[in-house]
Image (tube, rainbow, N blue to C red; front, side, top):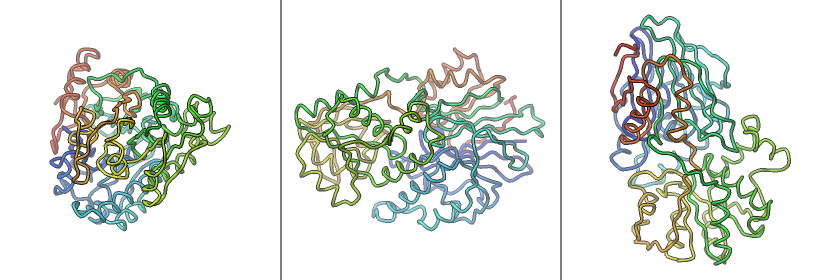
Length: 455
């Protein structure tokens, strides 16, 4: 008998982690992400492990975002030394992301570090690099990565078990599915058949706006060029920042914004990630690949990359107009906060959100209309103009999730994860009504289910 235990992202968006096991074999872990968001959620990062890491046969990592990879170094602390299968870009990106997470935790008096930098380095020695569409074997399982189109190197995982006697030969873990089509990456690969699907549901019940990011960003920058104000963009270091840089390159080359308008990339992590993006051209979508043949698609006149905190602080002495791209994407920390404290009280400031804003984050509070927020224990007035570019999400919306699922034949059971309860419920209803799939399950944290199709 095979079972799936849902050890994260079950009733929450973050903490993706699933244990696939057989009665007579070690378990196979798919992802081990960090819980992010409200305090009650982040406490889950410190819960006792529900399995013995030394008994795992292997780990499969779908992609480098911390909510899928951020707890992996805990395995190294518990003596885990088995393979962790991932794509080559994912390995490069998690080295940056996990070392950064360890460094931040070490220097944050309010956070208990889950692991140290040496744990990250120990973990990375177990990385096994695999390519899309190239099958590999883990015990009884034949595994294939499909391009999920979410971030560089992201994968959906197809697991085939021909030895199974319970009527289920093939399982799919979607990982995070991309908002295809997009310029940076190739489209999300479709999967032909499987009986059991573990699927993300972040944007269940919602459809992204059709607003073109190129046009939206152009309007925002033209406004600050008129007023001499500042455009603040909190942005995730992986994927979103690179997408912004690429759009800005086009806007400047096409003279849709002034070429001399300064754009500050104030995120050392995003700068390191951008260097990784420049390496893996074979993963580019058609538009980005064509652009890269002409010139650097992530650099342009007026781009200024800050390295030190001193350089970051000096930005405040500059006269506008200027654009500041900084982390973190939900304004939970990072350099965006000291810029926000300076510029949000000014009416000439524009604040542009380009990604999901989690519950109980400063970003969510501002997006919901709060006129003041607390930043580093100071009350900061929000007099800035606030905008939200929903179409720039890296996640598929409900129509695209349904399109991906509809292509898969022979589905008997769907588990919806990686979404808050209401989006999961909305997506479950749509799967039932539009695809006529009745066996849709919304697992709870640490809940376990048999894989066979009769339950």
